[in-house]
Length: 437
Ligand code: HEM
Image (cartoon, rainbow, N blue to C red; front, side, top):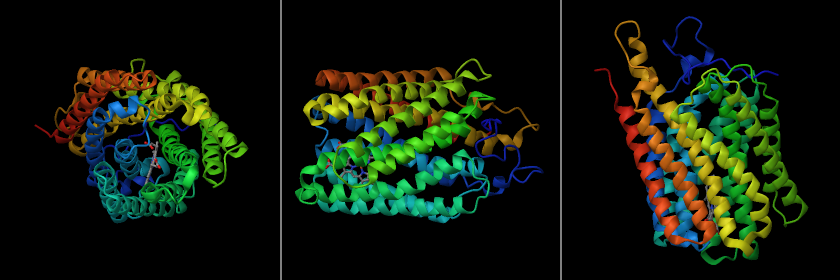
């Protein structure tokens, strides 16, 4: 099997939607407001999450990952930054990925509204100690996830040509429903602890890994399969590894999602998920290896840093998870590495997706009529590199500081992460405002 590596533009209709020969999906490219509102909200959460990281630095250094204020910061990243970015990217990306745009764009605006309201209530309630807000937020999130899952599933059902990305996204649609089910139970349990009693931490681990493997990583495999070859100008890479990654990640998340005690089931799920991550890394390295463009731009450098972080996470996971609550520092450092890796991967893609969208909508139509900037000229590469360094080094420092139990190091490194988030938000906002002179 060969990957379809044709460097097609993200929103497909590059020069003219409707031009002769434009693909089927071209007519279904969403209005830029749909991905735009997701990306704007995600960047706001990224910045608040960075500031929150500074605030909980001492708790993290003490390994107190289960404190409500820490859970709040974790979900500013997972729900606010990562999931909102994923929803936005899928809104934009489906026409390229599967040849069809989201079936109901209106429902995507509704799921966005439920999602951001849910994040605000859930995180705000956790941070300020208001259980009613936490529960309402969890319900809002469940609605947002559910509506998006149905929208995605209905869209996928209409597609006949079912390739690798289709199967990855089919898995995502399933786990988009499973994830909030766990989340709502955990949110209800936070109040008195009576709902799941002593198995709280096993359920937290299952919830986090089902969400990350079943939703986030599966999306990354499916999306990267189309975007990495395009962004790297990589041709001719085989895609066996990506198929393996999808099968193992979906299988592992499914085994983990089945309620039940610890033991062989959890170990099997862990092995499947770890195998899926390794297969994804092999696929990504293959894409980088086959690239025609030798220099790697700031966005792809950040994405590569995220992939390195994923490799570290998969090495640390068996030790951290087998020691469990007996080694809170290692466990907290492991989750930090994992979420940091995904954060860097996502942050890198903003430097590719947003400039392209702005270029496509504002400058593309003028090609041939006047001089227009290239996509890469829409932002200053040195600033983007500085941003990448702040995020990557900052995140590394946070993880090392947690492992060493050094609150001062975690705080200093969290300042770098927050500065990186602010810088990225500023750069991307400036790109979004670029217009024809
Ligand atoms: C869909 C809505 C979600 C809800 C309502 C939710 C709710 C919760 C709750 C209440 C906890 C704390 C449980 C406890 O300590 O007893 C938790 C932990 C966690 N969740 Fe979620 N979650 C959701 C989605 C996600 C997603 C999408 C991810 C990852 C991408 C995620 C990652 C995590 C992680 C890593 C933890 C452990 C961190 C910690 O306890 O500080 N969650 N979740």
